[in-house]
Image (cartoon, rainbow, N blue to C red; front, side, top):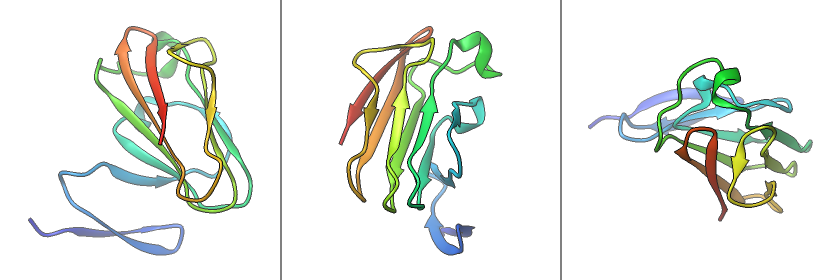
Length: 116
């Protein structure tokens, strides 16, 4: 299957229909329903936090099994914070470029978060 090239923070990124879409994050913010099944990449030197809220406040139904990935590409960290949602652990943050967080929705308002 041929890939589709798209611009992300000035760099061409190759993606395929079978892989999640890569999105550059530029500020601390709440998780949105449009972030689901995407890789949120921080390429800057500033750390950013993605806060997970209750399903009713996210702005769309998020199915159980949905996944969000946070990837640190630059010097700035990526943090997943529980906010009003429930995490299986405390807020997690990347510690170096290449660090990755994965959040998978396991029940209503509940996410399993791992650091890789």
